[in-house]
Length: 321
Image (cartoon, rainbow, N blue to C red; front, side, top):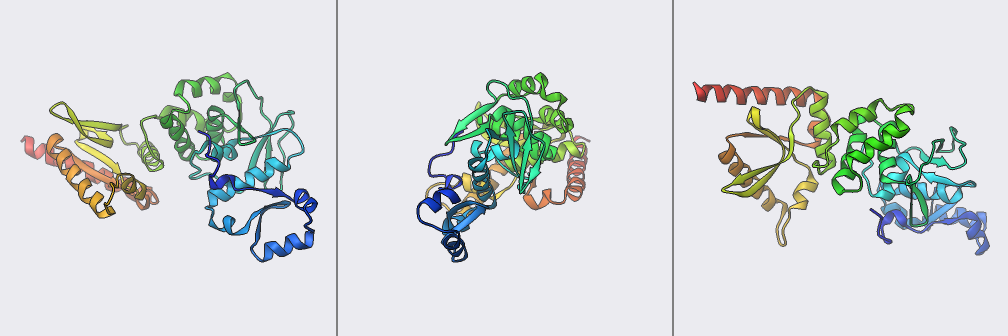
């Protein structure tokens, strides 16, 4: 998915040489930076100062990536983590301290001034052009993300691109097995591709699925539809029908997503409770909710979930006896 032209990640950039030709001097540029009129995302690259201050860490990283691309003296492609902002993919859990580029001339493997240059064989379809940038395609960028960060962060990226329809799982396996399975740091890639699920809709849901895998829970059915008299009345984040449990990830974005015109978040919470009651009546299952803070302490969360499942099983046995 290409970014719209007014996306903050595409805020205008100017290089030092361009500004000098317009009458600036190094002294005037330094003075403008001190006063906040200009910001310097990277040495030799400038943008509007007030705009820079409004950008998130991820958006500022995207601007730095564009600066590195603009300053490159050879043909390069923004790759790995640095391709993701321009595919509108999440950066959760990924290291943003370096800009990653792959050189088209076959040279690479160096690090300098916050830039990491990679060497990798480019095949037809690997490179995508957008807004004057060369970035890796969704298929290759997704695979590269699994080789650079944790398996959990890689799963977040892969599920996002799968769910949006930018890639399909068969494409990822095919490109991986063509040449990339022999690249270094691919152990996590195999794990991610086996866990990848296009039905998973958000960063929080991807992290929840990875948490359950990591702690040995049965694989749940994502986006499970609950039907009442032939009509789907609810869709559950994760269902474990055999255990009589379903799991919901509760993040702020989820409640904002379901806001209707004129509603407050409290209205969404009430409606969610009513939905939970209806699902429980139709299925006989119980709901376990997971939040961002829960995922920050996965060992404690695993204990809670095991205890919750055990309590449901005891209640089911009691009712059956």
